[in-house]
Each structure stands twice: as structure tokens, then as C-alpha cells.
Length: 331
Image 1: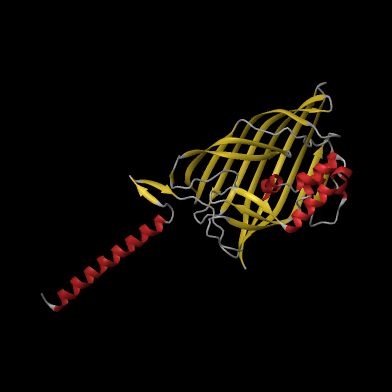
Image 2 (image 1 turned 180 degrees about the vertical axis):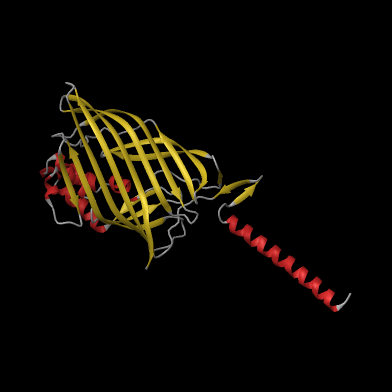
């Protein structure tokens, strides 16, 4: 074999080695999308991740339509649209898997329509007339609030803490006997864990601790606020796979648990009791391979039967909520 032939063999072998290295690297990149491959079925490791010093900016929007029917068959209806803009920021890494987010609710856009009248508010504007409207009071309470939100390794909210938030709550407790029960509800519910979490945390279900394949399903506790009422259920969750560059998860809820507390029903003069609830809710969650919540939606169509003083009524509630990632910023 001549010198040129030997060089050709070496070049050919080098090319094969280079090709094999590239192939292995490409497999490594694909493995970042799913944690394990067995029997040609990709399995994914889905979890929430918040890198240090990366600010996540979100928009939460809720549109609710309510038709109320009283015992004498008279009716009343209204429509509400609420938009909150808020940020998440992780400033510390922990060894126990718990994520602690610094959350700030920065701005609010609100509208309420009944018949031909409309109440409108934009926190970036100068018109403050909406503050005289009862429904707006409880909507406006979360505005400008900052606090820490603790999230479990399964993506579930654990608790909310905040020095100024606690001071505000304690202040309300001290004056609770001097404030009308309806007025007190506006404030206490507006800064409750349930209300704040319903706004600022897009994930409403628990995430699996192990790798899962497409069409995997599991049970999860599902919490929601329907027109200011706290409802709970154990829902069926299904992983729909890797769709349009994101992990897609959906759940369905068709029965509800509620506590016996009195609740605020818009346009009623006093707090009222919930007698029963029926309906259906659908929830959809999209998470990027990096562990960032990209988009989430919650749609529910329910009927709440209640008692106001001595009058029976029921509300047909159709609502759509969405949480959208507007941007990520390093600082």
C-alpha cells in the first residue's frame, strides 16, 4: 500500500469516527427531551424549573359570564373581565427541591358589564371611579401585593408568606368586629392564599415524580375559584405528549367540594350560602422542556345553587381563564 493509500484509509477512518461522535451527540440532545427510552416508547421527566436571576413576566386573564335566576323566576346577568400582570423570580436554590418565588402583582385591567352599564378600570390610567363599585373592591385588593410563594417538588403551591401581607391580614383581624361582613369579605378574600394562588400560579395539578410516557394518567387534587367561590375536586389528569415544542397536560373535573362558609355573590346585598354545585371544568397546561410554564387555560361551565337571606337562587357560570408567559428577563 502506497503512502497516498494509507492517507486515504486514515482519512476514511477519521470521518467514520467523526460521524459516530456526531451521532452520539445528537442522541444526547434528543435525550434532553425525554429522560428514558425503552421499547421505543419515549418517557419524559416533567417538572417545573426556575433558574436563578431570571424574571418571568405573566398575564392572567379571566372572562366570566353569569346568569342568575331567583325563586320568582326573575333574572339578572353580568359579565366580568379581569387582567392581572405579575412576575415570578427565584432568588435562591434549595437542596430540598422546594422552589421559593418572589411574586409581585404589578398592574390590573378590569371591566364589569350589566345591561347597558359598564365599570372600567386600568391601573395605568387616572380614572378611579371604579373604587366605588363593590365588585371591584375585592378584585383590586391583590393589586400591588408582593409575597413569597413556596412550590413543592411536585409543582404544587405549599404556602404564601410576606411580611407586609401578614401585617395587612393582622390589621383586618383586629378590625373584623367593626366592619360589615360583606365589606370584610372583599378584603379578606382578596388577600387570601386561595385568591392569590388562583391568580399568580398557572399550575393547578400535581406533577408526577417519575418519568412518564404519552397518554399516562394519574389523579390529582384540583383547586379553583369560580366567581370568588373556592371549589375543590380530585381530577383525572392525562399527559398528551410533546406537542408543538411543549409538554401538554390536561385534566377534567366534574364534581366539586366546597366549605360551608358564606360567600360573596356579585350584586347581592349580603353574603349568601352555597347549597350545591354541579358542572364541568377543563384545564390545560403547557410546559417547555426547560421546565417553564408557557401557557395554561381553565374553562368551566357550572351551576351554583345558593340561599340569600331566605330566597333561593342559582347562578349559571361560564368562565375562561388563561395564564400566558409574556417574557423572560435576566438581571
